[in-house]
Length: 397
Image (cartoon, rainbow, N blue to C red; front, side, top):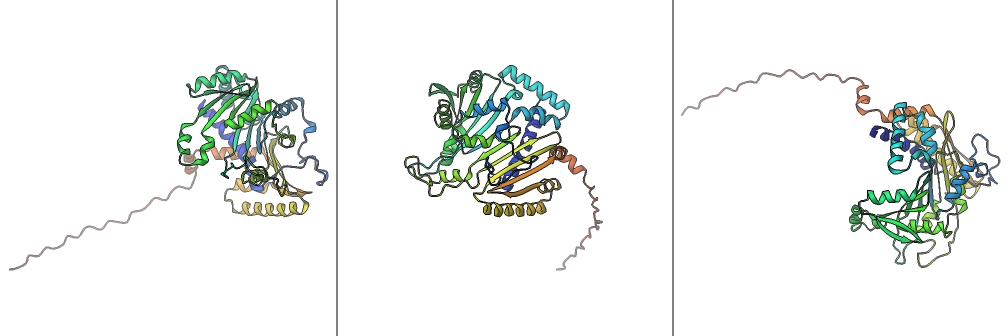
């Protein structure tokens, strides 16, 4: 079972790293849903709009609409990853062991990961304090599916062995726990102060949230209709309902908020320049034979879009020539960067067999890799010369 979970974690991390790596290499961004300036996209590479979503996806969107404002969002589709993607890569024996482990988890904890509707990580940046101190961002992980959130809360209290204390807020009960090692380290490093506590709360019957206490309070407020996430951010995140993993965020807005360009917590300030440049969207999805990466980055105007596209393309070429690993070079060379209207588009398709070979290579034991190398040439020792005895002489008086 431990080996199965390790394989599962490694595969999920690799899939996530593929999507994140492409976004980081190309600074992919948030697309303009209207595509007014980008023309008609090719049907094979266009990012699916939310107008074509299924009823099940619409239910997910309705659930996500109750979340609080966020500056960056990561959406994970557990059902597609566990039920469709992983069986293509893991051996049948490991898949069977994984499913048995999930059944045990369902019996003991009342939750089966293959039945989760979604897993979303939200990050919110904060304005500086009144004394102009930088504040660490807040985070929250929200999961919804076929489970009882209240039962999981009860289980969390039992597992914590009394470390989870109850706090009431907005008619709901949050479980809050202090992370002692971080709390102790925060005495030396004030930047860690925001991460000394973690909270967990049931937002509704089948939705559980965990994260920084302040952000969970905002989530409880949002469930009552206060400070909910913007429809623009949500539409960007789930624009492709078939994505395995998708990301959306506003890096420029996060920077402006964190460094006082929008004022402080006590003194708001009207921004002098409202720009969405850098707002991004990226997604990893799959069909029968390929994995596809799709991303867009807002550039504000067509000239800037072409400049950025040329810059990213040059960086990709340089990286492809500099990376020693042949598999990594192949992945980089398969990424296309183009400018369309006021956006930079990123497209890539990788055969599933290529990803499977890469996973096998990464999981290959180091001893096996070293044994396949050329045998070492035996070292020949030089002949040892016999020791020469020194002749002793006696001194005459």
